[in-house]
Image (tube, rainbow, N blue to C red; front, side, top):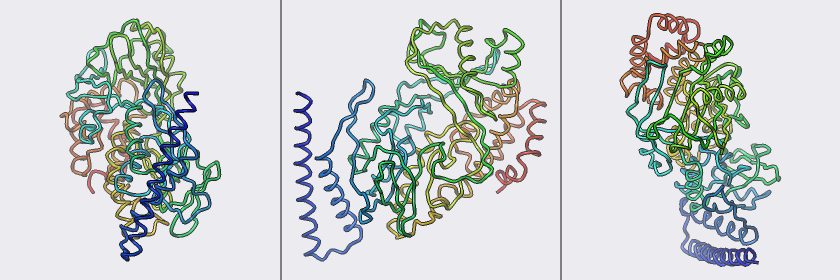
Length: 503
């Protein structure tokens, strides 16, 4: 009974708001008509208010409330009925409400563009955990969405080599971050469809049509595929042969663990747990993995066994068995597992076909770091930049049938050269043994802090910076690694690597 009363009150409130919005729309339309207003931006605002009125009116008829796991309630998603109505054209349709999709939708909505988002699981938490450097999130004013934050970050190369990195690290609060972006979007009038996309067609030169599985038709001037690594609507050049980062992790309640709670363990390549027999030793050497650990307190911790990059990918079951052996060696007694994580990230491979009608963003655009797997901070940083370019294109009346200019902004010559340099690193790391990888990362983290940090943060933007980084790393490696790096550069890097450091 209480639920019905609450639903009635909600519907009544929405009805009143919708009525107010309709009166406001009628008043603006009346004023515009009699004053002879013909300004393009004013016309845009008037249409946007009209859309808002229609949306609220529909919400009077259909509303729902969904809750996250043990967290505060997230408002219901919005359904604006636009079936078979080409008169209702959104500026941008975003497919996917992961970090990339919501970041872009937020940036677009803040620029007053009409945005519709389609995702079958809008109100569910993001599946993967994301770790980021604190300074990156502070620069984006998103540090309030990190919990916890560790003041220290540690790497263990082997039993005798370890380094404490002078940068704080944080775990993204997936629920808080997603809710923050959703709230901004909804307050800015973004329309949400909790549905999957069946296909995208080019209706006319002016717009594309998104057809959902429920046969809703959404007409948009631009469609952005932010569905991640599924390669749903963005075409890649063939052959597309990426490496894969694979990780199996658990968030667990344990009796105790040996990790300092003020340190985040970024990489632990020690493999004493894999020395019990010859098979384990061989597997550990040929397929290097490391431990990634986030201690929440003395009895709660997130632990993940990670294969940095391999071709073909290491299996989840193999990583799980390695993690169990590591926990047994460290005498960590798991009392309960609160969450399991299965993470598979394609790294490198070919670029998307630039200029195609659907614009990619995030994993679907190949934006993941080809040598590290990082991408979260990059899409958060790139979203406002891309949104500005989209706004300028719309208000200058450009034709979005090819989206050539936007693809060229996303993958400029400078960014392509940077990607070639990073991709060489990823290809090299996918081929070396555990001992070689240890030596490589010891040389890497013994570089000046700015240099290795810039590599991880997509900051080596000029050929000079990339050349100096490569030379500094090369001279810090031992003779065996120098030889293998030169061999890889000659056999695989070739012209792409050369261009990346001289152009």
